Amino acid sequence: MFATEVSKTIAIADTVKKVSESNSDPSWIMHHVLDGNSVSFEPFGTLYLPHLQLFGIDISITKHIFFIWVIAVVLIILSLAAARGYKKSLIPKGLSNFLEIIIVFVRDEIVKPAIGKGFEPYLPYMLTLFFFILLSNLFGLIPYAATVTGNIAVTASLAIISFIVTQYSGMKTYGVLKYIKNLVPSGMPVLIIPVMAVIELIGLFTKPFALCVRLFANMVAGHIVIFSLLGLIFIMHTYVVAPVSVGFALFIELLELLVALIQAYVFTMLTALFIGMAKHMEH
Image (tube, rainbow, N blue to C red; front, side, top):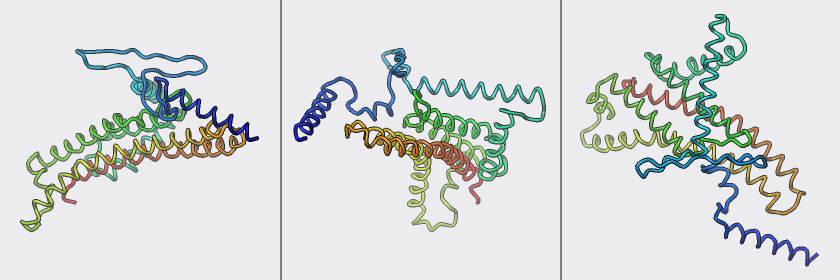
C-alpha cells in the first residue's frame, strides 16, 4: 500500500511538472473560463479563429467575440420569427407569445416603474440589454460554448454604454449645465458643497463600475465552482468522489440557470433605475 501511495505521489508530481513546463495555461479551469483564439469541440476537433492585424493593432477574432456574433444572430432570428408570427395573426402563438410575455414583463415591471414618464424611447435599449445578457449567460451553460459575460471587457462595455445613455438622458432633460448643477442637492451649506460635489462625481462612475463587476463576478464564479467540483475527481485520482462531485456540480449548474435570469434582470433594472434618477432628479 505504501508503494502504491508513493507511485501516486510521483505521478501527480510528474503531471504538475509536465503542465508547468508546457506552453499552455497551467490552470485547466482558467483555460475554460478565459478568452482564447480557438473554440474547442473535443473530441471532435478545434475551430481555430483568424489572427488579424490592422495598422499594427491586434483585432483578432477571439472565442468570446465569435460567440457574441452567434448570440447576435440568434437574437435577430428570434426577433424576425416573432415579428413574422404577428404578421400572420394579431393573437400571438408559440414563440411570439413567449417573447411577448418577457417583453411585457421588462416593460411593465422594470422599465416603466424605474424610469417613469417618458420611458418609451429607452425601452428598445432596455430590451436589447436584457435579452443579450440573458442569452449570453445561458450560452455559457451549453457544452462547447463560452460565457461572454464572464469577460470583464464585455461587461465593462455594457456598463459604459449604460453610463452614456444615463448621462444623455439627464442632460437631455435638464440641459448640460443644469444637470451638472443638480448633481449636488440644493440647500446644502456652502462648506459642504465641495465635499458633496466630489462624492456625487465619484458616484457617477461607481454605479457603472458596480454593474460591470457584479455581472462579471457572478458569471465567472459559478463556472469556477463547477469546474472545481469536477476537478476533484482528477485531483484526488479516484472515482469514489465522482457521485458527490457530479451531484454538486449538477446542483450548481441548475442554480446557474436561475443566476443567469437574475443577473439579466438586475443589470437591466439598475440601468433603468439610474436613467430614471438622471431624468427625475427632483425626486
